[in-house]
Length: 237
Image (cartoon, rainbow, N blue to C red; front, top):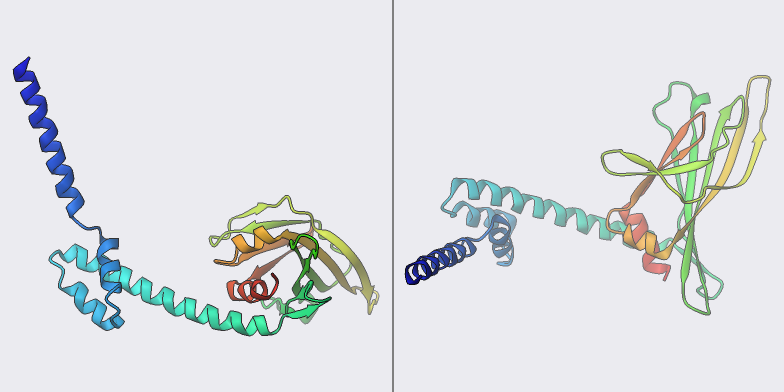
């Protein structure tokens, strides 16, 4: 029995030593963060990385340092753009209504002008003065030349790999009209709205979001960029 107890004690001791030894080895992320905390330039960070004993660690940490540099550059750019978008937000009704700048986009993968779509969109927010809750809606206008109306009816959200999934959010068609009609086609304009909660938009503020507005005849893609959303939400609160 004493012998068995002695064997167990030695085994546990060895496992404990092994764990201490493994914990003492910093991960590449920890090494990268330690170098970033030095507050050096990117070139100086790479010099520090080159001093690491393992060639593999040098390679991994160098890549992570470069990614960190690129992410900071992009974050600074997004912040600057968001500040510009924030200045273009209109505030109405005693700080209870917010309207973002309108974005206009035309399709650029067509051969004939007659096939071009013009998509306009902006976000509008409403603040309940009783409880302070802000709700939002995305206003969309799609103008196109066609023999018949498309009748958009549903939306889907897409990830960065362009995988899209139909949303339960309702696409409300506010109006649809035709103009400049001839024997072949008319210029149709469909105006639609999608309501979003404040929580939904603030959850998406880190990267923005992409969505598809779908009809049986054609699908249009709309991308709400991170800076655009950041700028709007900075004011709409």
